[in-house]
Length: 351
Image (tube, rainbow, N blue to C red):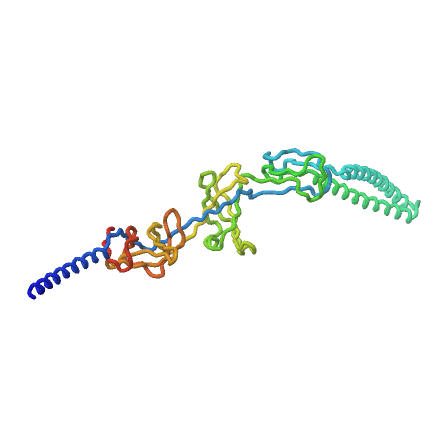
């Protein structure tokens, strides 16, 4: 009987020692070392890349104001031309004959006017001597007035024909480059039909359509950076649409190039529009835990214990995640070792 009592006492002591060892081992399991860092909110600017194509600010589609056949093309695509330089001419069979005919009529009328004017002067002298009737003098004066009216009418017709003749030649409206020729010698052209396009090379612009979220941060004369041919170029906003496109719901923005670029019309440039985020957090992406089911979260250390903080991601860029949180993130954030911890676990911080 005494042997059983001694055995029971030894067993009790042994079990108690095992319990202490298990508790110590459990404590070790519930405590782990992690790397942490302090985090505060800050303002972050994100650059959105928007492609665009260089356009000439001054560009013109040219046409004749009368119909006819192209008889001369003085330039070719790619030529640089001066303001007022002749580019293309048109033949209209009614122009030259009408001018010649009316010029001949005008000369005849002028000769008649000289003669009738002399006759009126002679009749006035005869009338003063009572050698002719009053009616004869009045008829001759009426003839003179009619000839003067005819002279004015024919001169107006000549002026109109000469003006039309000037319209038969297209002149360059400004210093520019020929970018399109749509008609060649011998082809018929309708009045108002576009036959040629010219662009001014030294003043360039771009047109883009962006979201209202980006648009609301912009104002006229703001400078926007762009990348063209691996170089940074600058643009100035010259026009902001006030209403969105009915189909795309995007806002149009027109920007003018402020730096010199050679022969870039039709080439692509990438603009970088800024979007500002106020009072947000930013951390390396690997800090965030996302099991694909729950909302993403991260761990922070508060009073030496792990605390789960759910976050709302805004965007990810260059390995960094920018986010907000419903509640202020307290303590220091776990940036390494978070996969081994759970809420409430005691942490040994290495900062």
